[in-house]
Amino acid sequence: MALILSKKRIYSGKKSSEEMSNVRVVVGKEVLSSPYDLLDGIKIKGRLLKVFESMHGGYSDVSEIPSFEVEMFLFSANNNSDSIYFSKNSWAKLRDYGVLADKFFVTIEIEEVEPVEGEIIKVYPKRDVAV
Image (cartoon, rainbow, N blue to C red; front, top):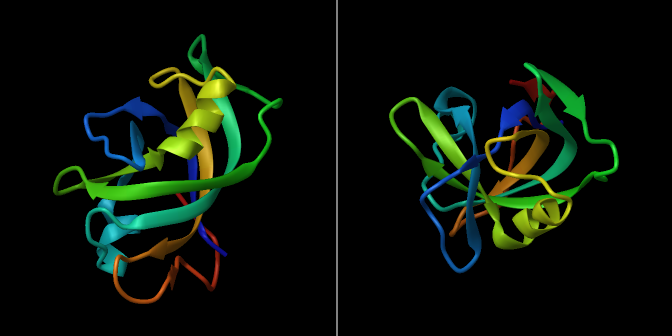
């Protein structure tokens, strides 16, 4: 079971670090950081399920991109939303398939978060929550 982020637009962002790219998806705080009381910079582990390209007001499934494990980092963008940045390694895999920020959407399954200190937290372990 997990948190499923469905058809979330990929944005180019401002943050970047040694491990973290400047590419992100955005989700409401009410589904991730608030219920789990998460702090900025924690590592998120999940799986890329699908990639969609924005086409003439709709979506086109990019089926040649396989599902793979992704690593991301959480940062609270403002009072209402969380920015979830792809790690440099995860973004490199998507980029190499020609996925571009602001033109593509992804569906990602978030399975767990890894605080800097403490134990790994399973995200919605009892049932899938899709947003």
